[in-house]
Length: 362
Ligand SMILES: *[C@@H]1O[C@H](CO)[C@@H](O)[C@H](O)[C@H]1NC(C)=O
Image (cartoon, rainbow, N blue to C red; front, side, top):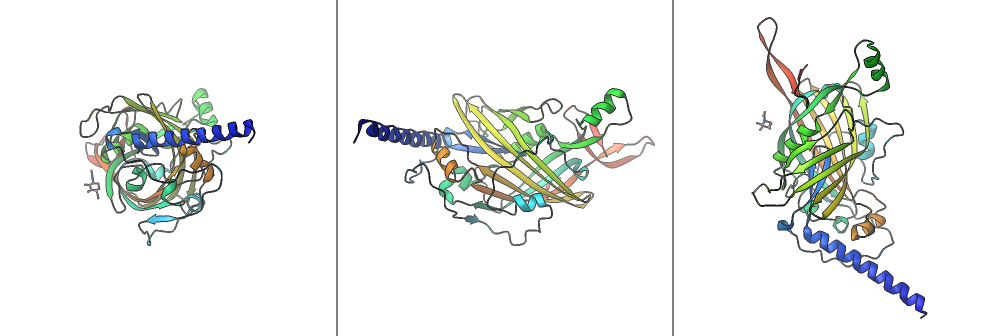
């Protein structure tokens, strides 16, 4: 063998070893994913370390075979109505959602979602399109991005808020600047409230303690401070997560069906460890009556193309496609409040407290 050929082989082998080691190191740290309404955060939880996987090392190149594994059945799933839901919840071959050219930087929801809701989520099924060998952490097999032990059939209730804000459109800027009438309002979710609410309801390992989210100026970024104590009071060290909301699409069908899809990247920093995770949440909401909404929601998990890890190789082989789906049924019930009216009477109204501490009622 020529010297250069030998050198080439040594370099390839060393790279492979490094990738394998990098993966085992990460797995030993046990990547945990936590979901905050609409986005997922991976957290490092050494005390829950899982054994390193015993799979054969993977060689770079080649294509992952389809090897669909499904946990749970959802036979009576309602028909998906929007094209967006059909193309993303109705599919197993999913590439990351793309941001439309000149698309909005905020996800605007249908007006019927305004208010505070008691949401009950039931995990109906888990799907692994390439099989379990392509799933980067055991918590995504034993649990879900929402909860490390969430299994099919589990239910969880939590409160979510959607409030009204002046949409940041060109037309509205002009309306506000020139004092031309009433600017158009749009419904957005209160990401700060919802992330704390979900994290508490799902008893996540490191609960969210603080959220920085400047929805007027930088709606695509959410900063979370995670508790330095685990739910059972074990010290975890300081940790935080930066969520980048990268792409969004929405579709309405009449006044009572609405679908949203949002892709996000979460960068979790715990000491010197940094974990990146990518997920997409697609939800088709159907208004049942004024006070009830039912929805089908999917969390799709993607691998990250980190070149120095085993996950990077898996990402190449799966061509960046989703490697896990978590499909939920959501039942939402409107929470109402007694509001004193001008005539001295009290009425039950749909209200929500905005992040600026203003109470909005319908
Ligand atoms: C929310 O709904 C669940 C399930 O129906 C129920 O058990 C729970 O009491 C409700 N919570 C509130 C605050 O209404």
